[in-house]
Each structure stands twice: as structure tokens, then as C-alpha cells.
Picture 1 (cartoon, helix red, strand yellow):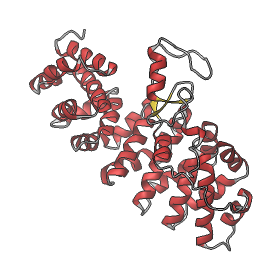
Picture 2 (cartoon, one colour; picture 1 turned 90 degrees about the vertical axis):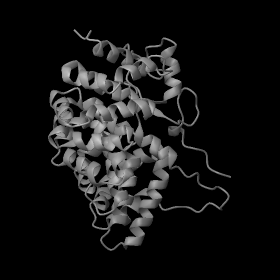
Picture 3 (tube, one colour; picture 1 turned 90 degrees about the horizontal axis):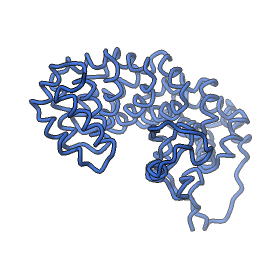
Length: 365
């Protein structure tokens, strides 16, 4: 018999395990299909708080929670129950200079297991001084200790109330340093951790202003494996909703890297380009990149829905500000592709395609 999934993994509307968790502006997370039905029915209040929402609410993907759900391993209940040490005992083992590496790894495993499923336990851990002990593990030279510490830190960051507190205790500095760790898995988890912290608006600015944070993500995007690139792009997408961070990313040379990765099929890179195209410096870098419009046209033909949505947004920004880009887009057949997309099932794709058609036909004044 397997343990049930944690309640945090269930959509507050459907009460089912979420397959595509998204965050509403109220700060609460729902499954995309459920909250979209709520919004399509004309509601403009949060189902939980009943607070008013914008006319066109933005649904932000909760990548950290989605990763935890997909990696969740229900614990077997068929084995006899064995009492575990208290969290405070485990923390004491972590910070003790005499504790062996194996005992510390075991402590982190136990704490990660209980904190993944129990929000009350996460709160208890943060209140009992666990964060400073875990950060010491994240700052360790041992890759196993570093990765286990990051995984536990990621669990603790699931609750929005903890995110600002984690930043205050120095989580950003340790996480940014882990982006340059020897272990690829450790680097990927570090990027996911930044994504989780960036759910809170004030943390986006703090992360972006931290020395080497944006540059380290860009380096991971350039040099990492597929998982590292995906997590780095996700983190950049999260922090670049803050305008100042877009310029920081552009100055770190992210645009050509994103275009090359987008050309290889990673749609998450196109999402970041859509944000960077909102700033003049980002558009100028894209205009300088030979084949930019061709790459975005390929995404329109072959990409996943979110990739198509953001490719349309990016092209609209480029073409709205540069007639040369309009000419190139028409030459690449973008207008014809848009004509087929205005009948797409996705409302945002239809709207973005219609807007780009309007621009390409010279009606953007």
C-alpha cells in the first residue's frame, strides 16, 4: 500500500493531483486546466481568497512544484513503522563537527523525505534553525552533501511564506555558488531553487542584483547539459519578468545563446526571448543575430504551444519596432503561418497571431 500524495500536490479546485501547476497573482497555485475553466466562466476573483484579479490574469508556471510532483515517490506503508529521530536531533547531527559524512547524508535524506510531504513540517524546520544548518551543507565541497542540501532547501522553499526568510538567511549566495558546482545535478537543482525563490516578486530584484547570479545562469545555459539548460532558462524566465533583470541578461550575452538553443528545440528558451524582446537592448541583440527570424519561424511551424505563443510575441515586438524585421518575416513566410494559427485552439496563440498579422500588414500605427 502506497502513501497518498501530499495535499500540496492537489489542485484546490479539482482536488486532483496537478499536472500543470500555475500560480495566480493572488499567490495561490492551481492546475492550469481547472483555473482556466474558472476564468473562462467569467470569474475574476481568486477561488481561495475571493480577492479581485486583473481582467487578463497571468498564469505563471510553478516549475518547482511540478518537478516535485513528477519526482514524487509514494512511500510504502507495508513495512513496520520505525520511529525516526526528531528534526531537532537531525539538525544537531548536521551541524556537529564530529558527524560523519554518511550520517549527514542520512539526516538530509530523512529531512527531505518528511518535508516534501508536510507543510507543517517545513514550517517547523524553518522555525527550528534548520536553514543555517542546511546552507552549510550547500556550501560544502562534497557534491553529494551539496546536492542533498539543495534538494532539502528546495522543499523548504515550497511555501511562499518561507521564500523571503530563506533569502534573508543567505540562500541566494549559496545557491548562486552552487550553479558552478562540479556536479551537473547540483547545478540543475540550484537553478530550480532560484526559480522557486523568484515566485515572490521582491526576490526577483534581489536575485538579479546579486553578484554573478544572472551571469552564472547564462553560463549554465551555454555550457550545461539538456536538464541544466532547461532549468537555467526557467530561472531566467522567472527573474526576467522584473525589467531590470532583462538588461542584465542581455549584457551577459544571453540572446545568441537562447537563439541557438531555441533552434535545437528547447521551447523554454523562446519564452525567455519573449520577455527580452520587451526591452530595446534585447531587440537590438536579436536583430544583430543572423537567422533570428528564421529560427522563430521554425518554432512557429514545429514548436509546442507555449513556444509558438512566445515566438509570436517575440516576432511582434521585433517587427513593431523594425521594418527590416517585417520584411524578413514576410520573406520567411511568417504571415502565411499566422493565417493558419488564427484558427488554433489556444486563445493566446490566436490573439498573438492576429496581432502579428496586423503588424506585418503595416497596420501597427
